[in-house]
Image (cartoon, rainbow, N blue to C red; front, side, top):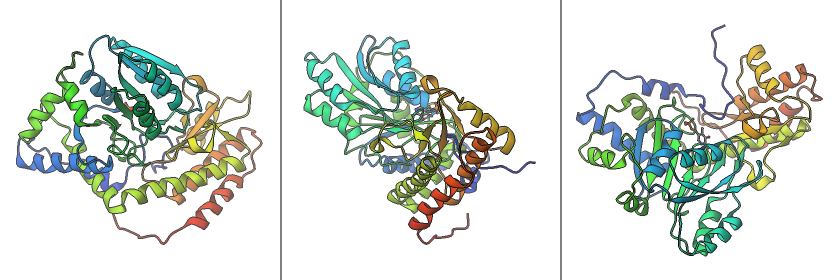
Length: 396
Ligand SMILES: *Cc1c(COP(=O)(O)O)cnc(C)c1O
């Protein structure tokens, strides 16, 4: 069978046909005006999605992981200290990257399933009288656990401590799917990738820099070359790129931002919230719980679902892939085998979400879990029926 089911992994996400087509371009000269007409609208579009008036957007041929490296190497010096909470696989990997770059990381070990402990950050920052800590790293949405942290609270903690550190936010699985306020939260560097909320193939590291972060670039001593935003800034000013850009992806990004703007950013967030609510209703009907400890922490882009003690949650993922041709996310790191994940970000609709819920249900029943066929689907249907709004059907 060559038909493609939607995927329910939290990235890469399903691609709208219009975006697949937007990425499929003939070769064009990236030193021509045609390229400028892709690059600048893409950067402007990203700035709007970040909800910023002033962020400088730099886009690299890389992935979200490369974006982390863009953030740290352009702003910090060898031996600098950064503060971060470890509450899942992605925050862990960013910490690991910092250590490999010779940074000292003040790690706040946080239970997986909890959010960033802003109060603990405030204590640490208040105690850091000589401002050893140069940056605070915050993973907005921990994709491994389905936990959304409160970045406004992290900013308040920094302000309460009157601390000058930069605020770096990993928004890889939140930007363009959940509210993200670059200016209001005082974010200094935001990082995302093309293959999650932007619904594109992987291949772009998308970053936004504040004025304060740009000032730090002048004195940052960490080695960088490919990721040096000074080369990006210089060549952008001449409508170019420091090396060969991923033109098709950048064009896709321009079109994606246009799609998001046409739907309305708030409507995009509301759609994600509604779809996530249906998934959570299904989880409840299955008698299962989320890895996220409390409702305030629930992510609208991914749900990590705990399976009963003694049951290897990875079997659900393997079985659904082998039997039904549908992809779910496995548990990572500390929660490997304990959770499986339903990704619900990107181009999903309620109808698509129902197919994922139905498939997860079949897989769990096949594997002997005490779940009733149709129970989760019915619970989600109730949510979707009650919250359905007239659909503007658009031909793609
Ligand atoms: C996916 C993801 C990343 C890693 O992005 P890549 O594009 O795979 O390098 C980093 N952080 C979070 C929160 C993610 O969800």
